[in-house]
Amino acid sequence: MGENERFTIEQVDPDGKPTVPKRTQDRFIHQCGVVVRDSVPISIQEWNKKKDDGVSYVDDRCKDQLWNSLMINFSLPPEEDPNNPVIQRKVKKWALKKMAEQFKNWKKRLNEQFVKKDETPEFTGQYAKIKDHWPAFVAYKKSEKAKNRSETNKLNVAKKKYHHVTGSGGYKVARAMWDKAENDLLAKGIQPATLNWPERARTWFFGHGGTLDPETGKCVYTKEQLETPLIKIQEAIKDVQGGRFQPDREKDELSRALGNPEHPG
Image (cartoon, rainbow, N blue to C red):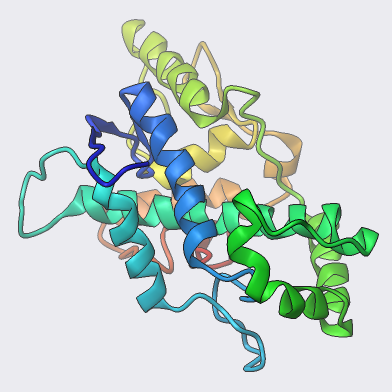
């Protein structure tokens, strides 16, 4: 993408994902991958800092540089308060999470296509910039530390209890369906239980299979959700409304109900 190409983002989802226009959304996502592949060496082992001091990671200064490089080609919607750039913070957080995902997938693809087959790519085209970092990348992927970390990740995935059920359309399509379910109830004079829920808790509830009773508007939990403290979300929301609980980024209504803090990212 040339430096003189400009794309204006007109609309942003609550989670920070640019959505309108669609062409700009696609360009934005694509450019997240381009920026991270061009700027972060594949020899960097992790996106976030780990407890193990011997593991290299992408530091905050580098993440700020990635964000600045990305935004050379994009403009955000106007902020309500220029001194409090809420939209910018949301989009930056979403973009860095997307970059983390794309960086992980890029290295996974290199590992699957080349390292595991004891092959080396021709360092041309998209592989040109990885040439100097290839020996370190291969050495780490073949190390006991990497193998142990891979096994740990597999075990963690196997233990995951909650799975998103948004379908092939992802959250964009799913949110429209959730909105319709609430609006249909409101049209019948019934208040949906999720109407005043914070966005993260609402997304978690619907995204993991929860629904609303079409006659009462009450939450219909999945079996997995009922086996957890998720039902305590409603208690947490009532405590916030009553001034008995003050949510913050590390411990909001959802994390209190689930008993774990929000993952930094």
